[in-house]
Amino acid sequence: MPERSKIPDPSLARLATVYRALLDSQRNGRKSLNSLDLQELTGIAATQIRKDLSHLGEMGKPGVGYDIGDLKRRIAERLNLSRRQKFAIIGAGRLGQALASYPGLVEFSFKLAALFDVDKKKIGKVVNGVAIQPAAEISKNLRRHRVRIAVLTVPASAAQGAAEAAVQGGARWILNFTPAHIAVPAGCVVRNVSFTNEFAVLAHFVEK
Amino acid sequence: MPERSKIPDPSLARLATVYRALLDSQRNGRKSLNSLDLQELTGIAATQIRKDLSHLGEMGKPGVGYDIGDLKRRIAERLNLSRRQKFAIIGAGRLGQALASYPGLVEFSFKLAALFDVDKKKIGKVVNGVAIQPAAEISKNLRRHRVRIAVLTVPASAAQGAAEAAVQGGARWILNFTPAHIAVPAGCVVRNVSFTNEFAVLAHFVEK
Picture 1 (cartoon, helix red, strand yellow):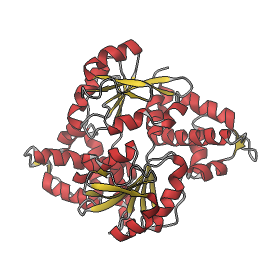
Picture 2 (tube, helix red, strand yellow):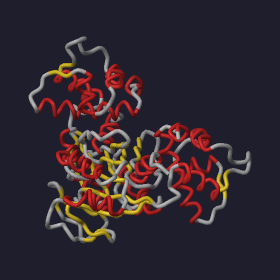
Picture 3 (tube, one colour):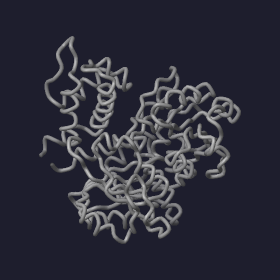
Picture 4 (cartoon, chains in turn red, yellow):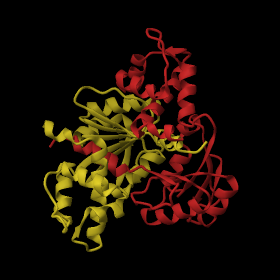
């Protein structure tokens, strides 16, 4: 589906932010919003929002704005948020456990399916309804539960091994929270999230 | 300093990734690297790395590559990593505590100076050498310790209040890990990190 990949990553991230604003607005009883309302709610410039939404095709009536239900459906459809997606977390340290309980993920249809750690003392502990399992069982369990998304929150030195076990279990989409660069077979997608990079980008703007 | 803002955010993030690879390589005893070595270490295309590094001015000799020490210094200088920068974390839940102990931050010269929470049971608990303090003291303590960078890891509903307390205490650079959009006075910079957005961008690539 070559058309799908045409939306650049920053637009996808902004569409996800807009999606969250729509969920909140709908909860507050609103039915429609225009791009200036969305600017107010998200901090993203109205012109940018209109540009991002243009990736979804024609929508919105001049002077009337966007129907929230319709816009929600179209973003969810395009971002694959319209059906439940299972994910596994490898590494049940503080970050892994924080992600396991992160409330926003449920609203985006992501469902924690498994949680792994090498630490024997952690095995069996329940986080957000899911018991921590031994890392040795990653491949077997991902395959059994048909989990295709794996989140890496292990130490950097364990990242490549964890990724390989996940891929062996059928995972194809990996969210890498470690600072390590991981190599995966063709057909797999890795998205790196680096806290230090986020700090570094911010620090660039700090006055000398 | 208008020249400083010319480097786009994605380049800054990639330069931070390159910086980490340089730290690792230096630890392993290497003295120089070329852009293909850096591609191997970071997963970023060599052509992209050369483009990002061009923001730092002339460097590297054809066929010889980059001197690691020199390149490290230049990136650190440009990203403001060459001097220690204090930061505070507001919200000492699992995510806040995970960030408080995140090992990579020290290597990037970021120093945890304070940690706050509203939960009385958490006050006084020591995380990474820093005792959790009551949220009521944010402004006073940030001012006393001259902390300019604040990290928000509170629930979304508490984000705006936490940001205002931080700004009142002199913070100007805010890393917002909550899904809430926060409004700050002119002169402040907010960088939003959204886990749900990271999942959503990844999910876009998941096969139907």
